[in-house]
Length: 391
Ligand code: PMP
Ligand code: GLU
Image (tube, rainbow, N blue to C red; front, side, top):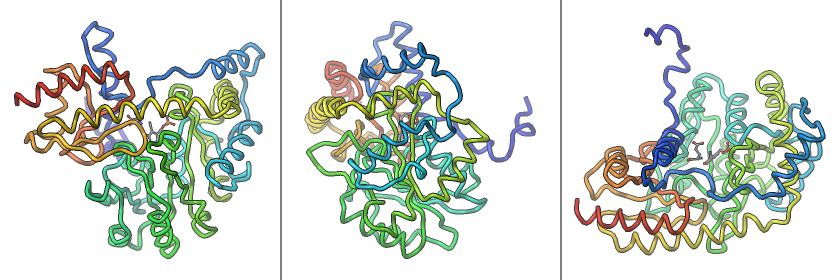
Protein backbone atom coordinates (compact mmCIF):
# COMPACT_ATOMS: atom_id res chain seq x y z
CA UNK A 1 0.00 0.00 0.00
CA UNK A 2 1.43 3.41 -0.95
CA UNK A 3 0.65 5.06 2.33
CA UNK A 4 3.35 7.66 1.78
CA UNK A 5 1.46 9.53 -0.89
CA UNK A 6 -1.78 9.47 1.06
CA UNK A 7 -0.78 10.82 4.45
CA UNK A 8 0.10 14.40 5.26
CA UNK A 9 3.78 15.17 5.85
CA UNK A 10 2.76 16.10 9.39
CA UNK A 11 1.49 12.63 10.19
CA UNK A 12 4.26 10.65 8.54
CA UNK A 13 6.66 11.53 11.34
CA UNK A 14 4.35 10.39 14.14
CA UNK A 15 4.88 7.09 15.98
CA UNK A 16 2.18 5.23 17.88
CA UNK A 17 2.31 5.59 21.68
CA UNK A 18 4.54 2.83 23.10
CA UNK A 19 3.03 3.24 26.56
CA UNK A 20 -0.46 2.58 25.25
CA UNK A 21 0.71 -0.22 22.92
CA UNK A 22 2.60 -2.19 25.59
CA UNK A 23 -0.15 -1.72 28.19
CA UNK A 24 -2.67 -3.05 25.66
CA UNK A 25 -0.40 -6.00 24.80
CA UNK A 26 -0.03 -6.94 28.48
CA UNK A 27 -3.81 -6.71 29.01
CA UNK A 28 -4.40 -8.93 25.96
CA UNK A 29 -1.95 -11.60 27.15
CA UNK A 30 -3.68 -11.59 30.54
CA UNK A 31 -7.08 -12.09 28.92
CA UNK A 32 -5.60 -15.00 26.99
CA UNK A 33 -4.82 -16.62 30.34
CA UNK A 34 -1.06 -15.88 30.51
CA UNK A 35 0.33 -15.14 33.96
CA UNK A 36 1.53 -11.69 32.97
CA UNK A 37 2.63 -9.22 35.59
CA UNK A 38 2.12 -5.76 34.21
CA UNK A 39 4.35 -2.94 35.34
CA UNK A 40 3.33 -1.03 32.24
CA UNK A 41 0.15 0.70 33.35
CA UNK A 42 -0.04 4.46 33.19
CA UNK A 43 -3.24 4.54 35.20
CA UNK A 44 -4.17 3.93 38.83
CA UNK A 45 -5.32 0.36 39.50
CA UNK A 46 -8.03 1.71 41.82
CA UNK A 47 -11.67 1.84 40.77
CA UNK A 48 -13.38 5.18 40.21
CA UNK A 49 -15.22 6.00 43.49
CA UNK A 50 -18.92 5.09 43.53
CA UNK A 51 -20.04 8.62 44.26
CA UNK A 52 -18.57 9.69 40.93
CA UNK A 53 -20.13 6.78 39.06
CA UNK A 54 -23.52 7.53 40.65
CA UNK A 55 -23.37 11.13 39.43
CA UNK A 56 -22.79 9.89 35.89
CA UNK A 57 -25.72 7.48 36.10
CA UNK A 58 -27.88 10.28 37.45
CA UNK A 59 -26.78 12.50 34.54
CA UNK A 60 -27.87 9.85 32.06
CA UNK A 61 -31.18 9.17 33.81
CA UNK A 62 -32.05 12.83 34.03
CA UNK A 63 -31.31 13.40 30.36
CA UNK A 64 -28.13 15.42 30.79
CA UNK A 65 -27.02 13.99 27.48
CA UNK A 66 -26.82 16.93 25.11
CA UNK A 67 -24.18 19.41 24.02
CA UNK A 68 -22.84 21.63 26.77
CA UNK A 69 -20.89 24.88 26.45
CA UNK A 70 -17.66 24.03 24.60
CA UNK A 71 -15.31 24.85 27.47
CA UNK A 72 -17.34 23.00 30.11
CA UNK A 73 -20.41 23.50 32.26
CA UNK A 74 -20.29 26.53 34.60
CA UNK A 75 -20.60 24.48 37.81
CA UNK A 76 -17.58 22.37 36.84
CA UNK A 77 -15.49 25.37 35.84
CA UNK A 78 -16.38 27.07 39.13
CA UNK A 79 -15.17 24.01 41.06
CA UNK A 80 -11.95 23.94 39.01
CA UNK A 81 -11.40 27.62 39.69
CA UNK A 82 -11.84 26.95 43.44
CA UNK A 83 -9.52 23.94 43.26
CA UNK A 84 -6.80 26.04 41.61
CA UNK A 85 -7.14 28.58 44.41
CA UNK A 86 -7.19 26.05 47.25
CA UNK A 87 -4.52 23.59 46.07
CA UNK A 88 -2.26 25.75 43.94
CA UNK A 89 -2.73 29.35 45.16
CA UNK A 90 -3.73 30.25 41.61
CA UNK A 91 -6.38 32.78 40.64
CA UNK A 92 -7.99 31.56 37.46
CA UNK A 93 -11.38 33.05 36.75
CA UNK A 94 -13.85 30.68 35.07
CA UNK A 95 -13.19 32.64 31.86
CA UNK A 96 -9.59 31.45 32.03
CA UNK A 97 -10.47 27.75 32.21
CA UNK A 98 -11.14 25.20 29.47
CA UNK A 99 -12.26 21.64 30.20
CA UNK A 100 -11.18 19.14 27.55
CA UNK A 101 -11.15 15.41 26.81
CA UNK A 102 -8.23 14.58 29.11
CA UNK A 103 -5.07 16.47 29.96
CA UNK A 104 -3.56 15.07 26.77
CA UNK A 105 -6.17 17.05 24.87
CA UNK A 106 -5.51 20.17 26.97
CA UNK A 107 -1.79 19.96 26.13
CA UNK A 108 -2.43 19.38 22.45
CA UNK A 109 -4.81 22.35 22.32
CA UNK A 110 -2.24 24.55 24.04
CA UNK A 111 0.49 23.64 21.56
CA UNK A 112 -1.86 24.03 18.62
CA UNK A 113 -2.73 27.62 19.51
CA UNK A 114 0.83 28.63 20.47
CA UNK A 115 3.12 26.98 17.95
CA UNK A 116 3.84 28.08 14.40
CA UNK A 117 5.82 25.96 11.98
CA UNK A 118 9.47 25.90 13.06
CA UNK A 119 8.92 27.19 16.59
CA UNK A 120 11.01 25.35 19.14
CA UNK A 121 9.57 23.76 22.25
CA UNK A 122 11.92 22.76 25.06
CA UNK A 123 11.32 19.34 26.56
CA UNK A 124 13.29 18.14 29.57
CA UNK A 125 14.38 14.57 28.86
CA UNK A 126 13.38 11.93 29.98
CA UNK A 127 9.93 13.12 28.99
CA UNK A 128 6.41 11.77 28.76
CA UNK A 129 6.09 9.97 25.44
CA UNK A 130 3.45 12.24 23.91
CA UNK A 131 5.15 15.64 24.34
CA UNK A 132 7.49 15.49 21.32
CA UNK A 133 4.90 13.87 19.10
CA UNK A 134 2.38 16.57 19.93
CA UNK A 135 4.96 19.23 19.10
CA UNK A 136 5.63 17.45 15.79
CA UNK A 137 1.90 17.34 15.06
CA UNK A 138 1.84 21.11 15.44
CA UNK A 139 4.86 21.41 13.10
CA UNK A 140 7.03 22.72 15.90
CA UNK A 141 10.52 21.43 16.69
CA UNK A 142 11.07 19.53 19.94
CA UNK A 143 14.37 20.54 21.56
CA UNK A 144 15.40 18.16 24.31
CA UNK A 145 17.16 19.24 27.47
CA UNK A 146 18.96 16.18 28.77
CA UNK A 147 18.74 15.83 32.54
CA UNK A 148 20.95 13.69 34.74
CA UNK A 149 20.08 11.09 37.34
CA UNK A 150 22.64 12.81 39.58
CA UNK A 151 20.37 15.85 39.51
CA UNK A 152 17.24 13.74 40.04
CA UNK A 153 16.35 14.26 36.38
CA UNK A 154 15.65 17.96 36.85
CA UNK A 155 16.80 20.75 34.57
CA UNK A 156 19.23 23.27 35.99
CA UNK A 157 19.12 26.97 35.04
CA UNK A 158 22.33 26.61 33.01
CA UNK A 159 20.86 23.68 31.04
CA UNK A 160 17.80 25.74 30.23
CA UNK A 161 19.78 28.81 29.16
CA UNK A 162 21.97 26.73 26.84
CA UNK A 163 18.97 25.50 24.87
CA UNK A 164 17.16 28.77 24.34
CA UNK A 165 17.27 30.23 20.84
CA UNK A 166 15.40 33.01 19.04
CA UNK A 167 12.89 30.39 17.96
CA UNK A 168 12.11 29.09 21.46
CA UNK A 169 8.43 29.49 22.18
CA UNK A 170 7.65 27.27 25.15
CA UNK A 171 9.04 24.98 27.83
CA UNK A 172 7.36 21.84 29.16
CA UNK A 173 7.46 21.23 32.88
CA UNK A 174 6.04 18.07 34.42
CA UNK A 175 6.17 17.87 38.20
CA UNK A 176 5.68 15.24 39.59
CA UNK A 177 7.10 13.72 36.43
CA UNK A 178 6.33 10.74 34.29
CA UNK A 179 8.52 8.59 33.97
CA UNK A 180 10.99 9.66 36.70
CA UNK A 181 8.79 10.76 39.61
CA UNK A 182 10.95 13.87 40.05
CA UNK A 183 9.41 16.89 41.77
CA UNK A 184 10.69 20.46 41.50
CA UNK A 185 10.91 22.53 44.68
CA UNK A 186 9.98 26.17 44.93
CA UNK A 187 13.52 27.46 44.63
CA UNK A 188 14.19 25.45 41.46
CA UNK A 189 10.94 26.68 39.95
CA UNK A 190 11.78 30.28 40.82
CA UNK A 191 15.05 30.03 38.91
CA UNK A 192 13.30 28.51 35.88
CA UNK A 193 10.54 31.13 36.07
CA UNK A 194 13.08 33.96 36.12
CA UNK A 195 14.68 32.73 32.90
CA UNK A 196 11.34 32.17 31.17
CA UNK A 197 10.17 35.66 32.11
CA UNK A 198 13.43 37.22 30.89
CA UNK A 199 13.32 35.37 27.61
CA UNK A 200 9.52 35.53 27.23
CA UNK A 201 9.04 31.79 26.97
CA UNK A 202 5.70 30.17 27.71
CA UNK A 203 5.59 27.38 30.28
CA UNK A 204 3.25 24.43 29.82
CA UNK A 205 3.07 23.11 33.35
CA UNK A 206 1.67 19.58 33.39
CA UNK A 207 0.54 18.97 36.97
CA UNK A 208 -1.53 15.84 36.37
CA UNK A 209 0.27 13.85 39.12
CA UNK A 210 0.07 16.61 41.75
CA UNK A 211 -1.99 14.56 44.22
CA UNK A 212 0.33 11.57 44.15
CA UNK A 213 3.20 12.86 46.15
CA UNK A 214 5.41 11.06 48.70
CA UNK A 215 7.40 11.83 51.83
CA UNK A 216 5.15 14.78 52.61
CA UNK A 217 6.97 17.07 50.23
CA UNK A 218 5.12 20.13 49.02
CA UNK A 219 4.20 20.71 45.41
CA UNK A 220 4.36 24.18 43.91
CA UNK A 221 2.68 25.48 40.77
CA UNK A 222 5.10 27.62 38.81
CA UNK A 223 2.33 30.06 37.84
CA UNK A 224 1.83 30.92 41.51
CA UNK A 225 5.31 32.43 41.76
CA UNK A 226 4.48 35.91 40.51
CA UNK A 227 2.44 37.89 38.01
CA UNK A 228 5.05 37.76 35.23
CA UNK A 229 5.34 33.99 35.15
CA UNK A 230 1.58 33.61 35.70
CA UNK A 231 1.05 35.55 32.46
CA UNK A 232 3.27 33.10 30.58
CA UNK A 233 2.04 29.83 32.07
CA UNK A 234 -0.63 27.40 31.01
CA UNK A 235 -1.39 25.13 33.96
CA UNK A 236 -2.65 21.72 32.90
CA UNK A 237 -4.35 19.21 35.14
CA UNK A 238 -7.08 16.59 35.04
CA UNK A 239 -9.02 13.94 36.87
CA UNK A 240 -7.44 10.84 35.30
CA UNK A 241 -4.86 10.17 37.98
CA UNK A 242 -6.23 11.93 41.10
CA UNK A 243 -9.63 10.26 40.90
CA UNK A 244 -8.75 7.09 38.95
CA UNK A 245 -10.81 8.38 36.03
CA UNK A 246 -8.58 7.72 33.02
CA UNK A 247 -11.41 6.41 30.86
CA UNK A 248 -13.73 9.33 31.52
CA UNK A 249 -11.50 11.75 29.65
CA UNK A 250 -11.66 14.93 31.68
CA UNK A 251 -8.70 17.27 31.70
CA UNK A 252 -8.53 21.02 32.09
CA UNK A 253 -6.25 24.02 31.94
CA UNK A 254 -6.02 27.52 33.30
CA UNK A 255 -4.12 30.25 31.50
CA UNK A 256 -3.98 33.78 30.14
CA UNK A 257 -7.33 34.83 28.72
CA UNK A 258 -6.26 35.37 25.10
CA UNK A 259 -4.76 31.88 24.92
CA UNK A 260 -7.78 30.36 26.60
CA UNK A 261 -10.11 32.09 24.12
CA UNK A 262 -8.08 30.71 21.23
CA UNK A 263 -8.31 27.22 22.74
CA UNK A 264 -12.05 27.66 23.13
CA UNK A 265 -12.32 28.53 19.41
CA UNK A 266 -10.18 25.53 18.50
CA UNK A 267 -12.34 23.24 20.61
CA UNK A 268 -15.50 24.76 19.06
CA UNK A 269 -14.35 23.48 15.69
CA UNK A 270 -12.70 20.22 16.70
CA UNK A 271 -14.22 18.24 19.57
CA UNK A 272 -16.80 20.66 21.05
CA UNK A 273 -17.48 19.95 24.72
CA UNK A 274 -16.06 17.02 26.68
CA UNK A 275 -18.76 14.40 27.33
CA UNK A 276 -21.68 15.85 29.28
CA UNK A 277 -21.96 12.79 31.51
CA UNK A 278 -18.27 12.78 32.36
CA UNK A 279 -18.52 16.47 33.26
CA UNK A 280 -21.25 15.70 35.81
CA UNK A 281 -19.04 12.93 37.18
CA UNK A 282 -16.20 15.46 37.42
CA UNK A 283 -18.45 17.82 39.40
CA UNK A 284 -19.06 15.00 41.88
CA UNK A 285 -15.32 14.22 42.05
CA UNK A 286 -14.29 17.81 42.75
CA UNK A 287 -17.05 18.17 45.35
CA UNK A 288 -15.85 15.14 47.35
CA UNK A 289 -13.62 15.48 50.41
CA UNK A 290 -10.01 15.00 49.39
CA UNK A 291 -9.64 11.56 50.98
CA UNK A 292 -9.63 9.31 47.90
CA UNK A 293 -6.35 10.50 46.43
CA UNK A 294 -4.80 10.59 49.91
CA UNK A 295 -5.66 6.93 50.53
CA UNK A 296 -4.45 5.98 47.07
CA UNK A 297 -1.18 7.83 47.67
CA UNK A 298 -0.57 6.04 50.98
CA UNK A 299 -0.86 2.77 49.08
CA UNK A 300 1.41 3.99 46.27
CA UNK A 301 4.03 5.05 48.78
CA UNK A 302 3.97 1.61 50.43
CA UNK A 303 4.55 0.04 47.04
CA UNK A 304 7.34 2.46 46.13
CA UNK A 305 9.07 1.72 49.41
CA UNK A 306 8.77 -2.01 48.85
CA UNK A 307 10.12 -1.86 45.28
CA UNK A 308 13.02 0.31 46.33
CA UNK A 309 13.97 -2.14 49.07
CA UNK A 310 13.92 -4.97 46.56
CA UNK A 311 15.78 -3.12 43.80
CA UNK A 312 18.52 -2.10 46.22
CA UNK A 313 19.45 -5.74 46.59
CA UNK A 314 19.44 -6.55 42.89
CA UNK A 315 22.39 -6.63 40.55
CA UNK A 316 22.69 -4.60 37.33
CA UNK A 317 19.80 -2.26 38.09
CA UNK A 318 19.69 1.14 39.79
CA UNK A 319 17.13 3.89 40.15
CA UNK A 320 16.44 7.41 41.32
CA UNK A 321 13.96 7.58 44.19
CA UNK A 322 10.61 8.82 42.85
CA UNK A 323 9.01 11.53 44.99
CA UNK A 324 5.66 11.45 43.20
CA UNK A 325 3.54 9.74 40.49
CA UNK A 326 3.57 5.92 40.34
CA UNK A 327 6.63 5.08 38.28
CA UNK A 328 10.21 4.20 39.00
CA UNK A 329 12.77 4.80 36.28
CA UNK A 330 15.50 2.16 36.40
CA UNK A 331 18.94 2.18 34.83
CA UNK A 332 19.59 -1.22 33.24
CA UNK A 333 22.66 -0.26 31.21
CA UNK A 334 24.79 -2.61 33.33
CA UNK A 335 23.05 -5.51 31.60
CA UNK A 336 24.46 -4.24 28.27
CA UNK A 337 20.96 -4.55 26.81
CA UNK A 338 19.20 -1.59 25.23
CA UNK A 339 15.83 -0.73 26.72
CA UNK A 340 13.78 -2.32 23.96
CA UNK A 341 15.71 -5.61 24.06
CA UNK A 342 15.55 -5.62 27.86
CA UNK A 343 11.78 -5.01 27.86
CA UNK A 344 11.10 -7.55 25.13
CA UNK A 345 13.11 -10.17 26.97
CA UNK A 346 11.25 -9.45 30.20
CA UNK A 347 7.95 -9.97 28.47
CA UNK A 348 9.00 -13.06 26.50
CA UNK A 349 11.03 -14.80 29.20
CA UNK A 350 9.38 -13.65 32.44
CA UNK A 351 5.95 -12.46 31.38
CA UNK A 352 6.69 -9.07 32.92
CA UNK A 353 5.61 -5.94 31.04
CA UNK A 354 7.58 -2.72 31.49
CA UNK A 355 7.98 0.30 29.23
CA UNK A 356 11.38 0.71 27.53
CA UNK A 357 13.06 4.01 28.37
CA UNK A 358 13.37 4.64 24.65
CA UNK A 359 9.75 5.83 24.74
CA UNK A 360 10.86 8.57 27.11
CA UNK A 361 14.12 9.46 25.38
CA UNK A 362 16.55 7.30 27.37
CA UNK A 363 17.57 3.92 26.05
CA UNK A 364 19.52 2.91 29.19
CA UNK A 365 16.40 2.82 31.32
CA UNK A 366 13.08 1.04 31.77
CA UNK A 367 9.95 2.36 33.47
CA UNK A 368 8.32 0.22 36.12
CA UNK A 369 4.82 1.32 37.06
CA UNK A 370 3.63 0.45 40.53
CA UNK A 371 -0.02 0.92 39.69
CA UNK A 372 -0.58 -2.72 40.52
CA UNK A 373 -1.09 -4.63 43.78
CA UNK A 374 1.70 -5.28 46.29
CA UNK A 375 1.18 -9.00 45.73
CA UNK A 376 1.82 -8.62 42.01
CA UNK A 377 4.81 -6.38 42.69
CA UNK A 378 6.26 -9.00 45.05
CA UNK A 379 5.87 -11.75 42.43
CA UNK A 380 7.33 -9.52 39.73
CA UNK A 381 10.32 -8.55 41.85
CA UNK A 382 11.01 -12.24 42.63
CA UNK A 383 11.04 -13.07 38.92
CA UNK A 384 13.18 -10.08 38.05
CA UNK A 385 15.75 -10.73 40.77
CA UNK A 386 16.20 -14.34 39.78
CA UNK A 387 16.58 -13.42 36.10
CA UNK A 388 19.07 -10.62 36.74
CA UNK A 389 21.21 -13.07 38.71
CA UNK A 390 21.28 -15.36 35.69
CA UNK A 391 21.95 -13.08 32.74
N1 PMP B 1 0.60 14.11 31.26
C1 PMP B 1 1.31 13.06 31.73
C2 PMP B 1 2.69 13.29 32.23
C3 PMP B 1 0.75 11.77 31.73
O1 PMP B 1 1.45 10.75 32.19
C4 PMP B 1 -0.56 11.60 31.25
C5 PMP B 1 -1.14 10.20 31.25
N2 PMP B 1 -1.64 9.74 30.10
C6 PMP B 1 -1.25 12.73 30.75
C7 PMP B 1 -0.63 13.96 30.78
C8 PMP B 1 -2.61 12.68 30.15
O2 PMP B 1 -3.60 12.20 30.97
P1 PMP B 1 -5.13 12.25 30.52
O3 PMP B 1 -5.19 12.60 29.09
O4 PMP B 1 -5.65 10.90 30.82
O5 PMP B 1 -5.75 13.30 31.38
N1 GLU C 1 0.30 8.54 30.82
C1 GLU C 1 0.20 7.14 30.84
C2 GLU C 1 1.56 6.51 30.57
O1 GLU C 1 2.52 7.19 30.41
C3 GLU C 1 -0.91 6.61 29.99
C4 GLU C 1 -0.58 6.20 28.59
C5 GLU C 1 -0.57 7.34 27.63
O2 GLU C 1 -1.50 8.13 27.62
O3 GLU C 1 0.42 7.44 26.92
O4 GLU C 1 1.68 5.32 30.55
